[in-house]
Image (tube, rainbow, N blue to C red; front, side, top):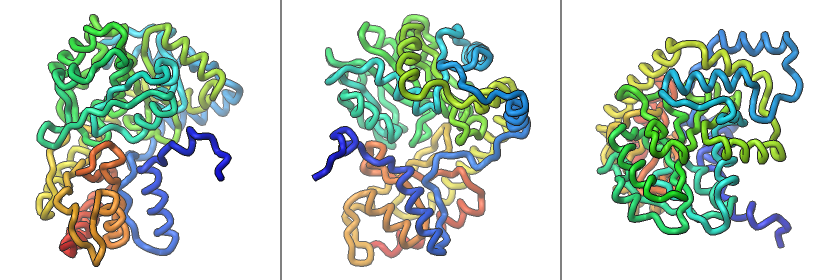
Length: 397
């Protein structure tokens, strides 16, 4: 008989972190595993950002930081929003948290009441649904497919809205699909949301700088809906700072004030040294971002060309992030060394054990037909991993 709280018993383990853990365990046994499950740039944090952290240590930024973040960092974020997104967020409309995940959970906890609905297009990032469950909300999943480039339409959204609808949450560029919503698509979605005065939008833009189709578009750019948009971002993906754990939101002041209240009880202000380094990141120009983006675009094209020769795998061309969300439903129901592949979870375990390649099953993202490849790794490892996957899949009958 468990003594744990029901909420933790109902909570699913993060599939991405679980697959990374399985990979580490096999590596500790001496097995050469290629880990394509992790959502992390394989670049090092730029030197000038690390230098800013060292300077902060020397200047003794080692005490408690303000709960909403240092004013200098929030000013840098405000300037970034204006410079890159043409969004006007005052300093008191910004709060810094311990990663974008913390930012998202703060907002959902502050807005969602028991039984209220959070609409999320699937595929969705693995933690959205679990955070909604912790807030005692109900996730309303809108399915998409590779045919629609994994994007919902405004018409699909409108059909899903009920009197209990509280939030629409989505990411663009998207994890896990790499899909990017255009300005026209975002306007159509905004026009639907605008009809329902109690409905809010969480726009997760953490992959903003890994965008292969031009200027990033924020849904908060439309003045008629901005007061109901929470724009989420951070430094993890764009500046190769995943371990620094800095996320932030731009939102109406009353929402930021509520998040400040919640954060004051749960985490207080986030890491002081990481905040000082993030100021340097946001003020550092585009050279590093442009180099990283070009590298990821090259890798995207490489992995797509390789997967095109793998029977039973269907892909689209993602416009951002660093993932291929491949349709592998061809293999469901087939025999793998005497074991039936019942779902993408089975297929991912088969590939881990037989190809020694770690991938994440689509079920974790709300899509039972697909499997996620991360190409945040070297060309050589991409080539070798697809070679292994192709060989292992050839043994499935």
